[in-house]
Every structure is written in structure tokens, then in C-alpha cells.
Length: 359
Image (tube, rainbow, N blue to C red):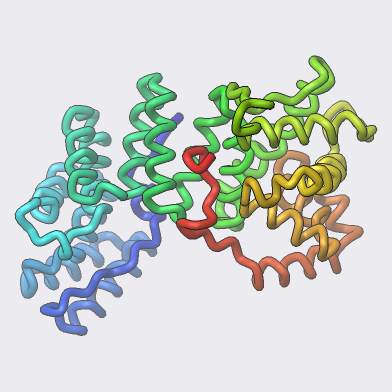
């Protein structure tokens, strides 16, 4: 997995924490500098930021942006010097942010200094133990070293620490895709698509989501069942686990359906599969035993007559030609779906988020 350290920081959409001691004029200058950074006018941004810092040396958000713009110019040593100031743990915690330590670690990673990169993320986690972005950085480094299981633990810590951070689900889907717990690749990919539907990463997740279902049906064709998790607890004292229940019900649906094949699984067949799955899932009471915001979303869409449109949108980069054909014939339904999604954006909370840790 190839990572682009600095760009990940740029894509975070960070909010600015405004210190009570910083005048509005400095805040406006910082905002102009960020606009210049986004437009790749790095020299202009640097001049503005240095002027702000000269007047307000403890305006740490300005120093963070200066470190970022220096890093974008590949002036890593100068960027590290600025990061050393803002990552000083003698600074009151309320004046720091976890992304300061993320940038520090990413800068060391850019210099191939693994020891200091790891130490920076760890120092940040000591300061901000529930930081999703820092846990994700740790996960990326662990999987690069071949420590997939430890990386997955970091992903789960990221999701439980902040269920709203999209990159936890993006990296989680990629990592679980290579694990024996592939069920979470399906769910995390779909969560990310809902959270960031217009991003390039959503295109990648769309193809992954489609291919996970294709492989599940191919598995059924070969061995007569779908197994998406290594955990087997069917019929145990406390009943099945969520992954086992999901795999078993999906297997039942695959068994009774006759898929229209064209060498690979058509998107319409995933819609048919999920429609039957929902009925069986509810019949067994799993809709209350295992509350899952994604499965509940399927049910709402089915009731609105939009499940097929939603499935085609989610899977569109797995089978682009099929989505194109569907879109040509179903413009009105896709527009209806778009309006529905605007009214029902996926809102994750600590009570409803999807996570391996929760089941």
C-alpha cells in the first residue's frame, strides 16, 4: 500500500481552532494563506504565514500551516523545525491538535526516518489517545511492515475513538480485504462511499465493494456457502456472531436465487440478493439483535423503492458499463435517490457506528 503522507494531511478538511488571544485580523490572514495553499501559491502563503507568526508567535495553527506549506515545497528540515515547536508537549493541550503530530510523523516518514515517525505518532497518541487519524497512521505503517493483525487493531481503535473519520473506513476496507475477516471490507467500503461519495477514493471503494459481492457468489458456486469471517459461532450458547449470521443469511439468499450471469455478477443481481437478504434477516430477528446502520439503510431504501438505484450507484465502478445502461433508463429514479440521500445523509455516532469491535 502506497501512501502519500503530506497529501493525506491536506485532505482532512481541518477546522481552525481560534485562540482567544488571536485577533480576527490574524484569523482572516490565516484563511487567505490556506486559500493560497489550496491554489498552490506556496510562496504567497508562506509570506502571509510568516507575517502572522511574527506578530503572534503562539498562534500554533499558523505554524502548522507554515510547516505544511514548507513540506509541500519539499523543505522538510524547515518544516520539521516548525513542527518541533507546535508539538512541544509543554504547550497546554487545548492549544494543540492531533494533526500537528500527524504532520510531524509524516515529515519524518518522507525522510525515511521510521524511528522518529513512529515516535511522533506515539507521542501524539499519548497526548490524544482517541485520535482516529493517528491510529490510522499507525495502521498504515504496520501493514507496510507486514503486521496486518496489529494494523487492523489500530483501525478498530481509530473507529471507536472517532466513528466519523472517513479515512478509518477507507484504510480499513483495504486492509480487511486482505484478511480473513472480509465482511468488514464490505461494510467499511460502503460507509466510506456514503461519507465521501464524490472523492476519487470512493471510486476505488465502489470497485472493492462490487468485487467483494462477486467473490462471495463465486465462493457459493464452488463450495455451496458464503464465509466472510473466520469466526464460527453458529448455534453456540449465545447464538451466532454478527459475521456468522450475515454470512449464513447471505448463503440462504444465494441458494434460492437464480442469478442472471454474464461471466461476472451483474449489479442487478446484488440488488436481488440484498432484497431477499433483508426479508430473511428480519424474519430471524437479527434486525433488532444486531443493529447495523448500513442494513437499516438498505431497508429504508427498499421501502422507498430505491434499493436498486442505490446498489447501482454504490457498485458503479465495479461494472461501469452496467451502471451507464441503468442510468440511461432510470434518470428519474437516480434523481429521486439523490434527493433521498441529501435528506438522509449517513450520520455516524457512538451509538450506531459499524465496527468489528461492536460485535
